[in-house]
Length: 260
Image (cartoon, rainbow, N blue to C red):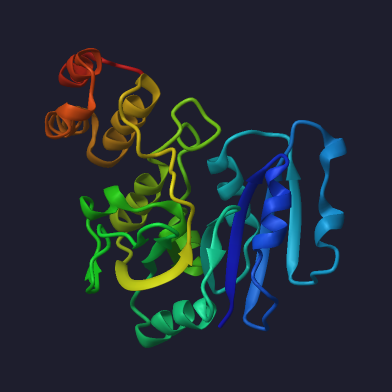
């Protein structure tokens, strides 16, 4: 069984990725989708020494476009979505593959990760469980792996109006996972830390229009227009101390926002 890592990177960040790539393995394949502003920024030569790496340059923008393109190119048994600023733990390939070997009924598994300051984050449970349409709301891209055959069978893809590089820059991951679950695939969590991620994350802020509307769009994708709008109001009420009065009011009236 092979693991295929699907990387999305942009501009000069490809140089950081070069240093973060895991070592070659007979169980590993890598796809890199590099978004650039100019064809002169092609960086294929940086990876010419790695026969296990496929490099693709894109002039388009948006991480979800990169991930969808990588999905189209993928051929491995298990896929893992990756960011260019992540370093992977020793033995992570076997850790991931072993979980799929143990249970052939599982179609997708999310894992935990560490940060330099906090170690494994407290939001990660210490026990395995099956995901539902609520639990996936806290899952980030670098936690997600899946059997490629299942993803392709149901035609799941990332929403290209969400995600880094687009106006509404977060909350694309739950939408992707919801499409797996709604298609009848089994999505579970395993308390295994597979990588280390920097401490800061752009997806954590909610007190601005784009972040708030990202959540509204996400909720509507998953739960429908009315339920999704109501859920944003409940989300805002729960997090009222993190919202200015302007955005708190906007959240409470989100059912009237036809199109963010």
